[in-house]
Length: 63
Length: 140
Image (cartoon, chains in turn purple, orange):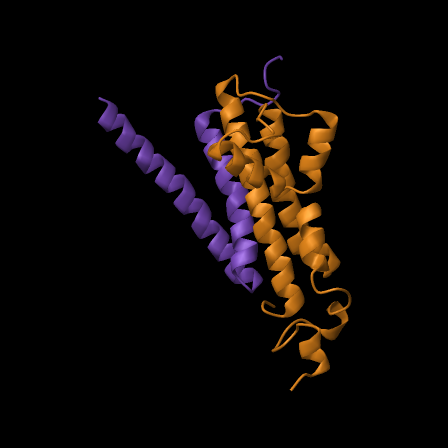
């Protein structure tokens, strides 16, 4: 078995995960297009921001 | 009072009458088998296309990262992974049939890929249930 075709960094994987999950959450959890977009952006920012904050927390715990 | 609308499982202010046709659970079933398919069936083209792009994109990237595709379950974590993978519907069955996807996690990115595939399945279940809610008129 060779190397994976796609090898993202951990952060790139987080951003992709947040993008896809936020898209589905936005469409399925709200009724109108405007509210879908707003909720999708809200979820995306929360995903990425929480990943960054938790990463720094783990960095300081590990030291 | 059992009206024709209630018999079809469509009470309240739901979608327009032309989208009521067919079996009430068909969008749920099609939505599970084909990501975004339930929304396409209900002529929600934009939502269906975005859901299909997000779920299939996640599934394909998971495979490209050599993520593990669960084929059998030996412990509780495997059972949960298999349940998540089964949520992908036809893409999961096709990948199993063609032998695409890793049997074991060998590199770091494969671990990310495994999660991508499982979460794509769970998101697909959410999308299929959303299509069912649109069909019954619970959501507009």
